[in-house]
Image (cartoon, rainbow, N blue to C red; front, side, top):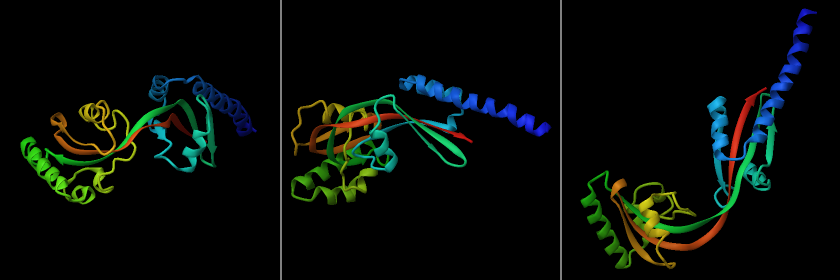
Length: 209
């Protein structure tokens, strides 16, 4: 009997906690709100993500893109409940490039520039960009033979943005970028012009049941 009374007292409190959490999530309208929410809860249970419609093709991403700004999705199983809250939704200009990155950290800035210029000469002589990228480039684009995929301002560095996004480049233009601050020296070919791609900013938060 004592156990039953304790259980009956606990159920309304648990329901209140669930309701309170839902209300808190409903009140979040900006990334700053989301960051504040995570600081006051267990940060390990939540995170803010950015989903890109061209890059993220998972089932959950596809379902989230169907929601409007402020929309919410809840997924529940035996052990936990996961909330997804759409904080922002917009179209952001992206471009595509092929890049070869010579890393000055592995040699020196001067040596990296010399290597970069030799590789550029090889490209101008007719060597395939993809082959040169596999042989000489560093970073994640080695696996894609130099292809950056769709990227936007801020994805690489401010110096790269200045040369790649803020200059009037045509598709097929070849140019170099000297990012000495980050010790990266680029050969860049623009492959796709500015294209607006939908992105959503999502707060994901999980609670145990």
